Length: 92
Image (cartoon, rainbow, N blue to C red; front, side, top):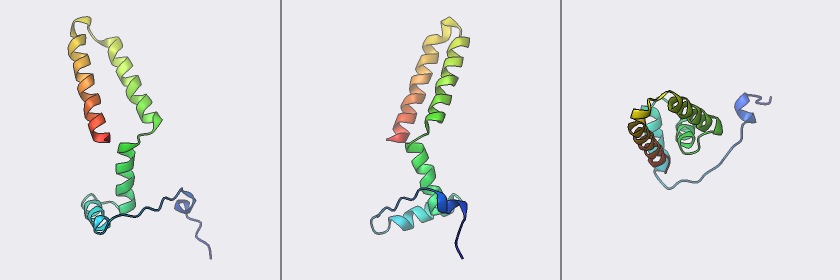
């Protein structure tokens, strides 16, 4: 009998973690209602967002720039740069 589940077709990465780290990840995963694998995928997605997600953010910014009052642009750009800085910090 072979296991033909869809997850068997996905790429696999085996990593070695220091003593105690797997248990720490498991505690956080349990608290978030996820498996260890799902918890790690959430963290990896934050660090390595898909190009599609980045493109969506760029389109949102471009649409917002088109609609902004010229007198409010300075505050708008300050807000955008703050958001980008937050994203940068979250991915480092």
